[in-house]
Length: 170
Image 1 (cartoon, rainbow, N blue to C red):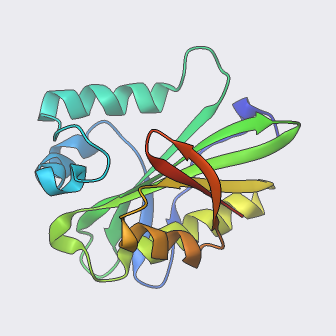
Image 2 (cartoon, rainbow, N blue to C red):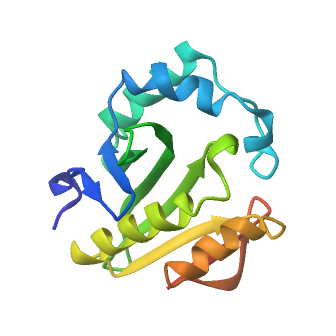
């Protein structure tokens, strides 16, 4: 599968729907992501609604050089359709193998419900079904919840660090 052949598909798990990203998702996501606590480990600050719309437009368009492909999903509860966060994967070819660098973010008000674990597991399983050879994530060494999510999708920490985060792979 070439990098141009990737397309997000809606994905479902027991409690969640992973919906491919659209620009209009920014309207409901901006209030959920407007929490400085989400930036404790990754730095930065919450995006404004306009910044989030611009970011989503770029994510949907993809990188201009075609060196990798971005997949982004909004995570929703199946029972009431409420958005709780997002998951994403950057697909690239490294040393001849397809690699997915994955990430997950769940709104602070929706954390401690297992949503990150369930959404990341569903995404990782789908990626592996698409013949991704290696799934990786970068996790801050003090972010215990994200380390648990990484373990749940079959990743293990390596000795590699990038911008203060540990590379997990599996």
